[in-house]
Length: 218
Image (cartoon, rainbow, N blue to C red; front, side, top):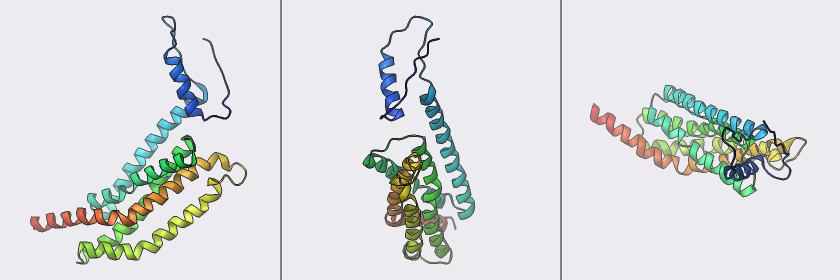
């Protein structure tokens, strides 16, 4: 066995690892030999896989809790639809700030799963309460959006302002958590806008269809 070691300076580990693997793909090795990229690159790849599994488990658990709370799979799916815009916002924030995708930023994506569904729960939960009381779907969603607008904006703003020092790298050790803060801030901004603007319209279509199905079954 021959170990070839090197330190990483001025480059991100993920990008450098991809370049090394690309160069190694064209390397001819004798029969019976193989080339393995280990060290920090291997540890990071394992961490990515583990965090991806954790995120998937978290989504499944959140979905189960939402179904039990709302007693409706449709409502639970509506709340979970706030996650894709959050993930997209996180990646956009990384691209805009030229921040690398590493373990810290991936942890931020996992954290977003728990943060963004809160806004959907506030909105959909309030609308379902009014619908159960006999109010129309459109009227219920409009009233819920008006009533929950301030709590959603306030909680999102407080979270973002709390992460701003980390996003700017202020304070000792903050550079390690900067990717996490950047991802969470970008994800919250996009997801909050999607929750307040797009989710009510989508929820009207889904919940109105469910209401008609229940009326026909009766």
